[in-house]
Amino acid sequence: MSPERSSKIRGEFCIESRAEPGGVVIFGASGDLTSRKLMPALFNLYRRNLLPRNFYVLGCGRSRLTDEAFAFHVRDEFGRIAEFHSDPRLDDFLRQCYYSTGDYDDPAFYDHLRERLGELDGRHATGGNHLFYCSTPPSVYAAIADRLSGAGLAAEGEGGRPWRRVVIEKPFGRDLQSAAALDAELHKVLRERQIYRIDHYLGKETVQNILMFRFANAIFEPIWNRRYVDHVQIMVAESLGVDHRAGYYEKAGALRDMFQNHMLQMLSLVAMEPPTSFDADHVRDEKVKLLRALRPFDPGRANETLVRGQYGPGAMGGKEVPGYLEEPGVDPQSTTETYLAMRLMVDNWRWQGVPFYLRSGKRLCRRVSQIAIAFKPVPHSMFSPIAPEEFEPNLLLLNVQPDEGVSLRIQSKHPGPKLCMSALTMDFTYREAFEEEPPEAYERLLLDCMLGDQTLFVRHDDVIVSWALMTPVLEALADPARQIPLCSYDPGSWGPKEADELLGRDGRVWFNP
Ligand SMILES: NC(=O)c1ccc[n+]([C@@H]2O[C@H](COP(=O)([O-])OP(=O)(O)OC[C@H]3O[C@@H](n4cnc5c(N)ncnc54)[C@H](OP(=O)(O)O)[C@@H]3O)[C@@H](O)[C@H]2O)c1
Image (tube, rainbow, N blue to C red; front, side):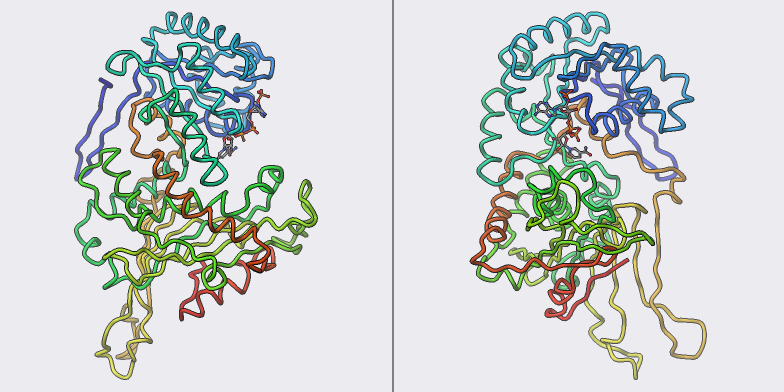
């Protein structure tokens, strides 16, 4: 069992578990994700004493690096983070980092890996527990799992000891067929309990707080339904353009990049029924049940339920910026959407008739991710001559990034004449309440992998159901006969005007921060 620390101070209840001994093997260790997210997250866990003493990292890849060169590379990347550079524990941490060069297709590499892991397990007394992190392009996930199994590195011991876990990064397939094919390959050699599919949005504090907010407070759940909620908006806006990732984005677009994963994950947490416990499968059962209740997309009504867009050239922050079609690496005829807005309906008792509006785009006004629960207006006004529709309805905002927190908009008496009323906002921000920055999503997720807790990881049926919902949308967008317009929008705006019309037709407006 992992050591658990708990505290109970003035209403605070906190359980912190330290990871079990083990080795973390990162495939694709020379890449962007490893440098920017994985190694900083591991070092932060180390600094917070959440990694055990018996621990090591083995980076792997085709790049030829020695142990020393890899440690040097990590130290160099950490140079950006002031508090890391001056931390006296950095040298000790880097002494536990190693590297092996190899080709993922070559069985000889895995024979070498088995020997190396055996030696490192002995040196660090890890008990042979291994976390294999695939931080490579998805095209090699299945080959890595297959070769690990061939080398005897994927099988767990009796009772799951030593444990062997494999982490894979999104995208989990490009559509329903490829997602099912990837799952079939992985399940040939791994049990579902060994597979950790990361959607890093689930590691964000505010996203996890949706569960606490809904199910650790008695006051919200009674009004969390069609009687009181008018509609829900979920937005992930990015101010950056496609940047240096045109190669990836051209093949993905907003639907694959955001909707199939992050947006549907947030939607399922906001709308699901209460799970019976915080057990991984109880939570994931409810999420999948909710996704199954989403009304299937009707391609014949695409123009009533979705808007796609692409940013044109313009100016942002006083600087000229290119349009998507002028970005390096983008096909000048590309029809890839950089913006998507959709109206989804949930066909169950709780949400019948309540629209869920989702939107996500690049080169928008601000980088912000937010969930807005818009409540119905008051049924009657006792403050004559103010009509009920003149009151601003209550609005609950769950701010996912960058200012993590919760805001509630309410009507209040304004100081002044007898009938002076205005909307005010009650704000809670993590930074002010806890006087610290919320931890990076990858810290929580890596720790959970090492603890064997799959609650915040996407289960195979979740991936399949979400692709089953989104694949017909992809097909409609790709079908010229459907004539779904690709609407242009200005950089720095909140998206195409057609997206405003999508809500306008329902008598609603987007909440732009
Ligand atoms: N970067 C992010 O912020 C981010 C966010 C979410 C998800 N992801 C996902 O996380 C994974 C890693 O992302 P990344 O940005 O670090 O990717 P990356 O930099 O493009 O690639 C990671 C490493 O994989 C190896 N690699 C590249 N192409 C390969 C190929 N065809 N076959 C085998 N190895 C290859 C390279 O290392 P060697 O040449 O040394 O082998 C490279 O350094 C991807 O699946 C990505 O979709 C990334």
